[in-house]
Length: 637
Image 1 (cartoon, rainbow, N blue to C red):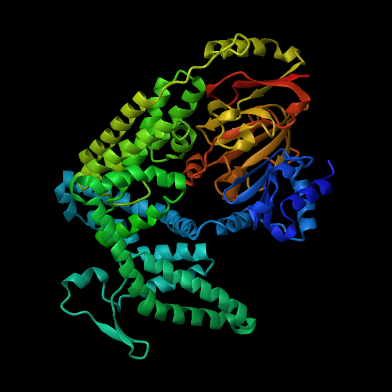
Image 2: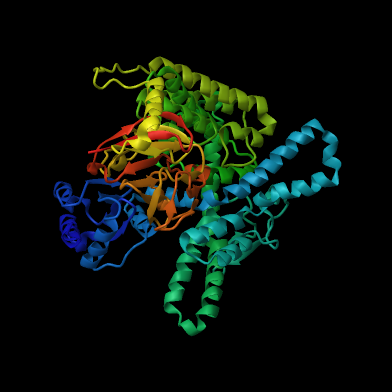
């Protein structure tokens, strides 16, 4: 391939360098952000030598080129475009800027509140455990141990504005310690504690802006949005000052002016305005949940899953944090549990009813994941493909949420739903169990009734093999493969569930644009070598690795879909380029649960990138597998 020519034609067919905003590449494709997508001619792009496909996703124009080549085309591309190389994170940010303001604002809230979930969960679980134990053993509340641990359980909520400020400063690009100072100002002990206002006879005031009006000298305990707004302003001001203040005095002037201006504006403008707006929102949510007969919660539970599909569910973290801070109870969490477990039940019904082994192998683990609070595999991998199941899940979620509302169930933390939710709903154990039972039962029954297996016409030549046939075929191959040079065997690189490539939720892999192969939905957290060979490429983000067997088979193992966007978080590479490996050599370790928690499918495509050099790539086994199992055969031409 003439890399320069390919790059030049791509640049021309996206509308030229003046239409290019940013460019990066991952293991398989160019990821471009362009100003006007209408100027890109996809048909011409697909005809460029070396281009295997073109599609749009997440605000990016993604051009599939393939491993070992995409980086060379990229180098030529940025040279022709006259831009500097961008990281995947830069491109992701540029693409996000093209999203509607509403979506960008919601995503930002998610970015602020998701990182502090561990602190909230730790405090919430401690609080729930203490309450549960004290109900069984009332005398415990009189012990010193109870007093000390109760202090621990309350710490994250008492100083929640500080946690939010540190996280927000990181998201907005400000100094995290200055952000912490701003939040400390907002809950300073010289201000009246917000939780004491209701019982106070008088509220201290101070004149602001040269006597223009008075403000109440009350802290912002119980508020979250005013902190986010204040730190956003602080970050903007700080970055502006860094640009205009001479470097010799920047260290002193910028922090001083930033804290002085932001602190004063926060106590006199941002705090009063946005605390009032936040109170209105929280009161509205509480009103919705408490509408008689659970009508409001019914609609909230039914619409929860569609908001996950739309990608705007991150706003609920801020909502739940606000409820915990203001009233001490998270009444939204049971609604989320009803919606999540209902989607899991809908997928479970499909898994038990279908006779299609491919569908079953994907739906069953996805449903179990949803019961534990991670719904993306069930929603995106199963239920949306069989839309009646998705609707069944929405109905089950609505009815389950109605039950939760009737019993006024509340939680002591956020970030946990499903089965683990029992740990933070200790005062409502049987009511929470009933909510789950109702949502699961309704969704399961509806999905079972509505899901109809589509008849499949099977010819003798294309009849699918059942598991026993596959096992016999695998055994037969293992007996002669050592002496048969016409076949090459790929062993499972992961524990998990083997699925055909066309079931991968990414058209680049599913369409076999990069080559034939298979995929595994992992149950473990370690990728191992599937044959004896050499490591040809280790990606800096750790999410993918390239291998070549001793007999010329080139393989790409890509852990997760779009996980390049994680920037290497949750991945650890255990080998280096050029290293010799044998079957079972550990290649990559990854945090399976955390990746899914971030919303990324962990299904792992295993691609024979030079499959055109061979006669066929044959899947020998589907369903459950252990690392080292024989799963795929590659036939020589």
